[in-house]
Image 1 (cartoon, rainbow, N blue to C red):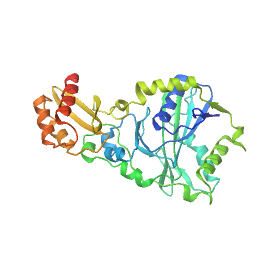
Image 2: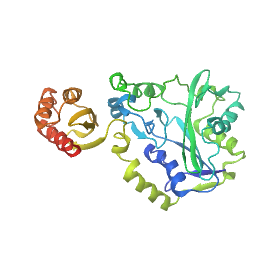
Image 3: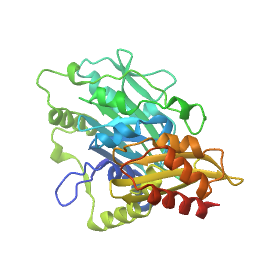
Image 4: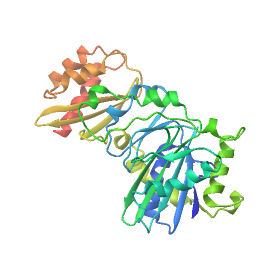
Length: 340
């Protein structure tokens, strides 16, 4: 087994959209032989499964107001919150997928290391969650591609649990639509208070890596350092798909189209579906605080033909003060026309 170093120009990568795309790159493009292992940290972000409906899973306003990034996985799984108090580990195999689906196999090295510290961690029965005192400190996911796979999860050292609860607040009306894979909410717990006194996050990282790789020094770990060519390929994939709002915000089951435009107040996205000439679904994605009622525009247009007259009337009734009403109407009508 070897460690995959995802630093760039000597600096660690904390960008969640970058980091969450790397497993796909290693499994499908680079295909290094053997067993790779990534261990990294993301800046505040919500990671959702490939087939989830972000509008049902996440409080979008809270997300934007607190500069939390949204990232859609290339694999399944539920919605989770990451921040600088949380580790992510991933196993990368490109030529042996025999253990696909066996979460316990990939969790065991981490569980074993924690048990050596006399922490009673275990895998929840019939689940991919790792628990302590009945509460979740890790959620695992994996995907398979050909003979390759990526399998891993989180390790909550000192996650901001309050942020996690608030940003992962479900939208009950959107949830009732039954679109996409639903998350299974569980009480969560940090490991920090159960570790030896004085064990910092850096100490914890070093301990885990030494145990997982069975070495006495981090210098003894065989390491693959990402090259500039690797990063160029990753940048290309991000620009085309994984770094785009269309993928992360717009790739929702039941929603077929996504577009955005920058107004004087900021960027505004829309996610919608038109079927048989009528709007079936419509959600706004404002990256700024809107003075007015965009939800009234949604309610006023769903199940109606998106004609200019209908759109203009819905926008006017919403009493939006910090977006030019005519410009907003043009943005909506122009994009609705393209998808009909």
